[in-house]
Length: 84
Image (tube, rainbow, N blue to C red; front, top):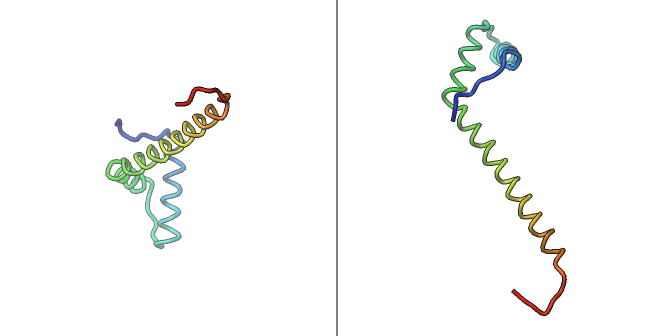
């Protein structure tokens, strides 16, 4: 897996959210540099866990859709004397 990278626009939004969280929930003001450092730390240290969870969730949805399609195809089958 390659490193988790955000566009400048995404990073700007995330930085604002981190700074707001620190201000509102922890009553601390942190600067942009500290917020970016914290984001990079979390992306590098635990980002893979969130990424993998997203992959697992996507895989489960795809598996369910394939199962639904297989069932739909089975329903199209016409009755014959042949049985599986």
